[in-house]
Length: 559
Image 1 (cartoon, rainbow, N blue to C red):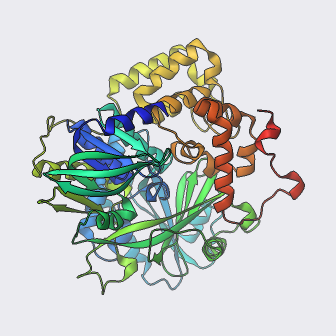
Image 2: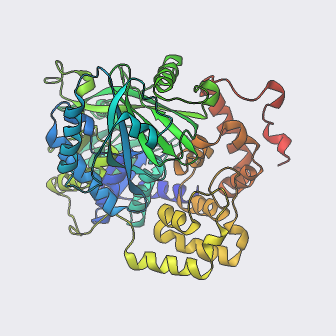
């Protein structure tokens, strides 16, 4: 809390060049871009960073192959280039992965037509990835024996990319980049509205933790509140050409279905794409596409049944997937940027995730609509140009604000890791060497972890059973990752709550120490808060545990 509290104090100290409301992928990328180029920027979010749409994605970085069906080739071309750029800029985090797509008998397009489309998609992506491959039903079975090919006429394999860690972690790293370049950022700070006086925006803010209110002043106001952009524009009396339409998507996380590192893509019973995505020792299945009237959504019984029914039809498992297999769920809305004047007659399912930036020059106000993780670097660069157009000085226009640390820094880290034989300390259940994992998550910050492990080998020990987090990573999180609630760590800075069942997390002896490291004297309160809130809103999914085997309350763990 020390970092957050000091930043909240700084929010009232001065007038910022830019204040960004919303710490999802759009707001985080904008903050990193502006701060890196020398702009005095502040960033607030009424919840945790990446606690909305940005933590409910498929973890895929893809060029939008489905938009080829609506002939939106310009968007596909742009997204493919953005995907390639992310792979080159974040090689440890954003990695190419193969997609295997099957074609059912009687599908609305001929196999040859789809096959041609995959090659066109590859060419539109500058032939950057591995070439597509056509598959017969026999070769599909040989590649992935769990796929049901009885009603399949063939398929194809092509490449896109995915995030090795979770989406919210990727977003937070942009926030951390902004902080490293002098930005002031604080989570759990809500904007209650804004008004413009004498060329300055005055935002009334509330510290959600303490309920204190205070004012923040800035020359330019950026509304990057994700699905709630329209809501905040109403508070600040802004009218924009775009508005949001909402589409709900859910994912189910289940035990690992295949140990092949590829995404299985199918067309569901309604003709829409859904995926079987590797997630370390688990598999993520989804997503749905349900039109909603508001951004507040939850997983329903029908949602779960729809996904289970569709996946069980398309896989030949020893035992069909059931609710007992569900480890966790993800549920969020896609924010679709539309113009009321032109979007009425367009098929809702054909709406794309492209972003739109609306700028009101007289008020020095910017609204960011729509968008997807794949396009985040473009959002950052475009926001910089808009801010510059509004008269803010860009001190370092040529600075590259994104990407992994320079190669010499990585070589130094790997050299030190080799000298201390770090990879020999890799936990047996880990999916990759420890040096690779620490570098991917923390970059240059991992050098400090090596020093901690040298001084105290216990810092290199696994802390929470069933996860891949070391004791030194918790210490890093406490000081540098602005964790206010236990959920911030378990769900967003890490993906622990996605891949480990609630009852296993609660009973883990290491969780007590993790809470002590993160919260000190507030450890027990933060533990109880997490499980009370989580139990209140979790979907009623049958558990493997009987009533007699229910997890103990925290007091019984002998704090």
